[in-house]
Length: 366
Image (cartoon, rainbow, N blue to C red; front, side, top):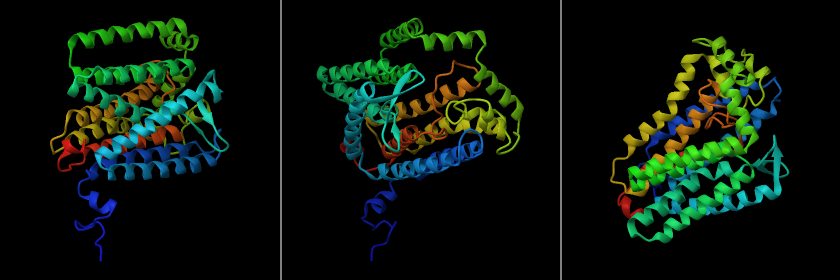
């Protein structure tokens, strides 16, 4: 009889169980539980109880994704992510044609019972594909692979400008730049990309009214949402006012996405907010310590880029809530409400856990 979860178990799950860095599953589960508490506290405001049921469904799909992806071999996962990348890019092409416009931007494709945001789902797969072609270029010196990356990046930039989604575009540009720096390790390239980033920020400020409006309000201190967020954080103090007792959620729009961090601090306190903030870099540290077997350049750089993306988006969301940066509409990974965002980071968590597992002949598998 097969001994499930023992070393002689040859099933897909059992045969991979002992190679998985199981401690890496802890952080996503903690974040998802915190997200459930935050969404639960919103019930009774402008959001009906249906919100938490939908959030639970998204969470269940995400858990299945996090558990399934690490069971694949690294090579199979890379091929699977490439297929997802192509699908999501095609969907991104459809957004300007069939996208549902919300607050002046078309970012979602709406179906009968749900909607998806291709730019969010694309993050993990696109980073892996971009990193893979950079890896092939470094190994073969074939400029064809670099040309593919340039065309992919250009297509994504144009499509995001058409929506427009400047916040997400800045995230993509940051990750593209990071991957190039990781592979080429050239100081001149680093300086060049820095100037390109500054130039793009200036172009965005003078070309898009909603960007200049947010930046001007941030500099003048006139953003009512951020002011309410800071008041809620101050009201929460060290230990918070208790679950469901916060008042920010009654007066601020998009509380289930953009300002979920402020709601958490108001109800659970500043110490809890620091704990949540620390979970994202902690996951990166755990990943770094989990990689025991030799890994090639693609594995290391892809893991670093995915973890950096996670920490960067968390910083952007948290920074918006505490007035460090202008509001961008970014979700807090695995805590904010949203099926596309949650599934996107489930793919990222699952990919990082897969690439961190210690297999024999890691280089050959890649």
